[in-house]
Length: 294
Image 1 (cartoon, rainbow, N blue to C red):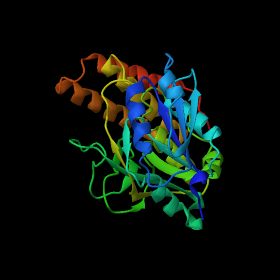
Image 2 (cartoon, helix red, strand yellow):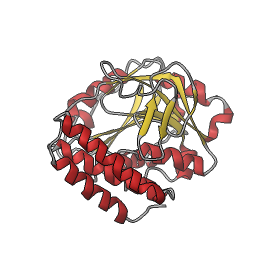
Image 3 (cartoon, rainbow, N blue to C red):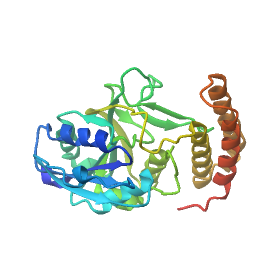
């Protein structure tokens, strides 16, 4: 049986001191105690409140790093975790009081030692995590679009788990090679890549609705840019890099069309200017030349 001290919960954060402080306070309300919480802080400025956070009910570890990026922060958290079970959530989350207990219940089944389990993500006033009712979990189309439904009561196997609420054994994390730091910026597809890495070594990825968080989608902080159009650079780079990594070069022409379609849609909605096309083209090229991390 898994005990709370065998669970390490990892939270990467960047420029969200006040928000992540609230997330830590919510973790005090967990239905069990004794688990480990690791905060990986990539913020340039120092925050003594985070470093000296007074925890009740869990073991708190604060790690300050200078290199930014979600993949790297998650890897650092995993490297420093004492638990046999790793749970990852975003810094702008409200965890359900039974979040840790739910993951413990799921992993008490020994058959799930090679499973990566994604939990439910509730996000009010948006369908961001519930794009397609006919699926569960995360999927990637042949032309590069990600499809997801992480807000359903139906469980099932999928291709990837959302990075904002998932868990697995530390052994499986190490065997899969952790997160690939070549997924840059807003780290689009970094969780898709990790799901594929788990499957590549014979693991499985499942969605279960029992571990629940509410995602706040804070519009500031994190890796969001002052220039929103630059997000298309990251999307294009990471998508092209992903397709190269998994031997899908023959589909890159259709990926190019899809990415330009996204840029056009954003321009029509007046979310981004014409510069989004330029960022898309630059990102596409960079994705073609980035050295593959296999």
